[in-house]
Amino acid sequence: MESEEPEDIRETVTALRRVLVSFDVSRRRRTECTLVSRFIFGQEVTMRVGGREKRYRYPGLVHRPGVERLGQSVLLLREKDGEDLTRRLAELRVPYRRERVWVEG
Image 1 (cartoon, rainbow, N blue to C red):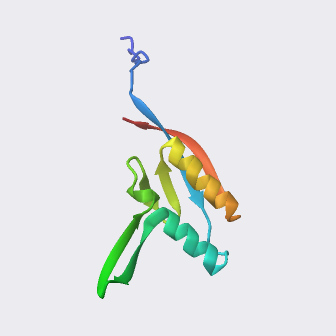
Image 2 (tube, rainbow, N blue to C red):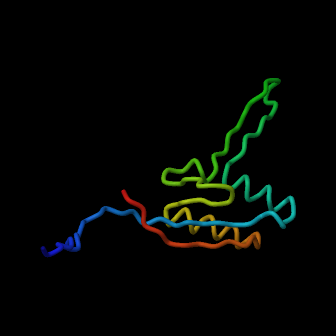
């Protein structure tokens, strides 16, 4: 009896191009850590206006569509957002690694 080996199966898969960025702010100054955190997660500021407190919310990178936090200091982003993040990290001299990946769409 001959053993039949399955033939290679070709599939068409819709994949989205994304960027995986990891960075390390652990050995940076507190100011740099705060700036990175605000850029990624946004911030909320409470001010007194006309005798009343008013909250202002400034969304961060994770609030953009297509941005996903995979873990501590690891994000999966669209290419444009990845460029924004790596540019900001480079300005602050924060070490990072950027890899292009494809995700099933």
